[in-house]
Image (cartoon, rainbow, N blue to C red; front, side, top):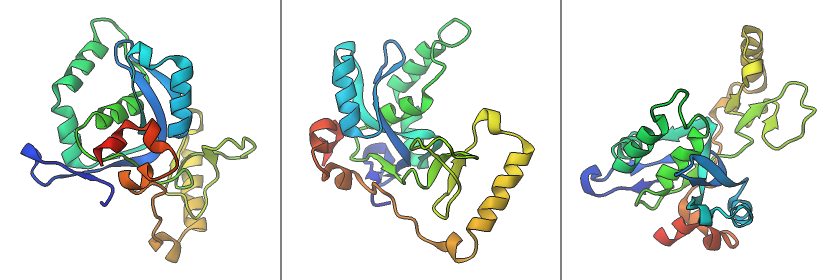
Length: 213
């Protein structure tokens, strides 16, 4: 897609695409922890300063596709898993102990690996109206919890919600709310490319990947 990077070298003309619904953070590889979390780049940059992420050796801030849906093109996935730094990170994370030293934040780490790639690409943000956590009574008005709407494409069912009745009810609601023309509707990305993202406000000051343009 237009928002993907085109890799050279062994990848030839491979298109590298990474997308979903994005959050932002920095990450400290040494201690396997997320630092400076935020809903967007400026919030994450502010949190990074407050938490002293740079002094801890953190990478970022960078966007990552939240675990609700993480999409990578096959060429990008192949590139990521072939990197010695990724292999070494996984080796250290597994360690010799049980449980693993690294047991949470795989979506953030994947975003970090893509951020460190030498390609002009970012995590394409489809939008939290399209990919979101699912609420039932919807009394909690937090941003990531939404009922099914005509914009919903992927809904995240939490562990305590995962039972046959809920799965069947969700399928029926999707069918009732969105069928026919609704299913064929084009739903644009809120952030369709690195260039688009870096053209907004002061994002260039907070997001180092903009220098790739």
